[in-house]
Image (cartoon, rainbow, N blue to C red; front, side, top):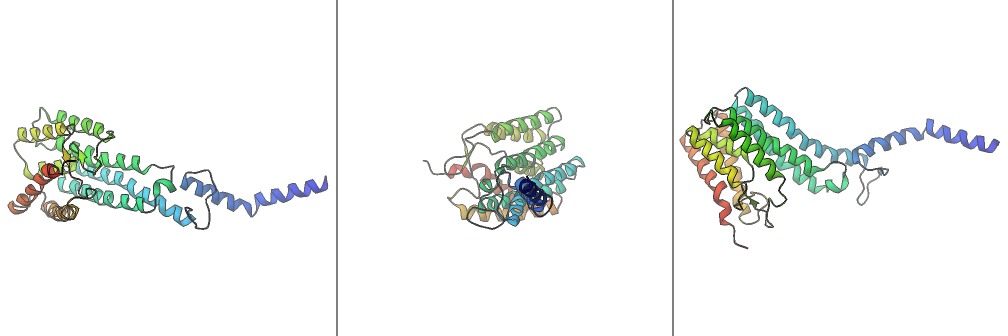
Length: 275
């Protein structure tokens, strides 16, 4: 009995003393990694140290900041501060271009299985690529008042279906159908400010193209002409910044150059080699 009591006292002492901080540490890391296994405190093949777990989670946090950026863009849109809205959407594009490579570099899906980076990315992309631009186009005054809300509804509903399409990309990483880049469509609507019914027809055409097997270029993932596509993307981004800095009125030369690039965005996928 005395031996048993001594054993129980030792175990109680471990729980109340030195073992408790380790247990709390294990709980904290379990929350970060999303697994029930005790996270290792030393690095090894396929293992995460405490600092690595925190760093990996920060990549998810970076992706999630896109939702906050979208919120700021929506506030700007509600105030009809269109240039500020597009600046926020541009920041969201920058985050979207950085978080994916970081996640793949550390094999984030395997190391932190509790949080799905793919789902998180889709959620953030929908609000930045679709929802905020749809709201902006609807409230811009650039569409006929009688169809503006219908156009916005068509954009968000068609895009929701497109985001759920498991065949949205081809084997060689082209998009099938208009890839719901309504941030770019809205940018051109504000840049060119066409007659209201022309703008409505433009939106209707893109909604229809969403469901047609027409190839669209992914400027990063498509291997063919990738170098030229990346150069094009860099020049387009610079011209877009000039446009935003000039409150969406950059002058004829910049507008003309952006229009040429816009034609390439719409029809460049047709240069795809037949499989």
